[in-house]
Image 1 (cartoon, rainbow, N blue to C red):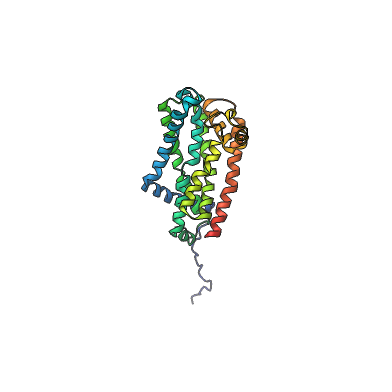
Image 2: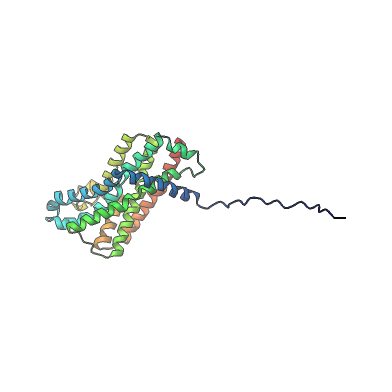
Amino acid sequence: MTTLSTQAPAVRRPAVDAPRPWPLLRHSFALAGRSLTKTWRNPGMLLEALFMPAIFLLMFVYLFGGAVSGSSREYLQYVFPGVLVLTTILTGQVSTGVSIVVDMKKGVFDRFRSMPIARSAPLLGSMLGDAVRYPVAVTMLFGLGYLLGFRVETDLASALGAVALTIGFGFSLSWLTVLVAVLLGDENMVSWVAFLVPFPLVFGTSMAAPAETMPGWLQAWAEVNPVSHAIDASRRLLLGGPVAEPVLMTLLWGGAALLVLAPLAAWAYRRRM
């Protein structure tokens, strides 16, 4: 007689993939690819990054160079670091905010909401995808600056540090546009706010002229203005001078802006959506 085994065969369960870490970053980088595709298909977004730095640099050098420094060449050395900061602050501000508003109105973010992704990933993905404009604008600015006669007076490492510092600072402040876009939800209002708000920050500094030549009230504003520290850091990294204090202050202000504005934008987005 044969003996029947009473032991039930083992059931093989399908393997369950372990959850991947850092879901917000993974989802954001995936959506950043979508933003990059939109940018490549819309050359106007890149043209803004190409032409805006050139317009500002040429305008300052040839309109104010003779009056401020007596020579366009000397003034170019003075104003270039400030224009670098201005470029990174303004680059993509309007287009990023408008792009977010358009996606919200077209229901794109509603579709994202129905997907198993982090809630804040669409905002961060848009920001990361639009960040391609920063190297484009900075490359354009340095290329034109060198054609006009600007020269870095320190070294390559310091110049790259100035570029990295100003891009990081501009990226931190750009979250203000994202917050405004989510709160207002209107292209015209976003364009107005994104274009006008940075100007008191940038022009209330020593970017175009030494702060000592300004009225007392404007000097006081320049001393507490976060952009002043970024311009000082950029100028000293490119032209020489003590850099520890302005670089540290720029990092602190940029970090504070990112820690405040990014969570506020994410909170406003979650409440709206």
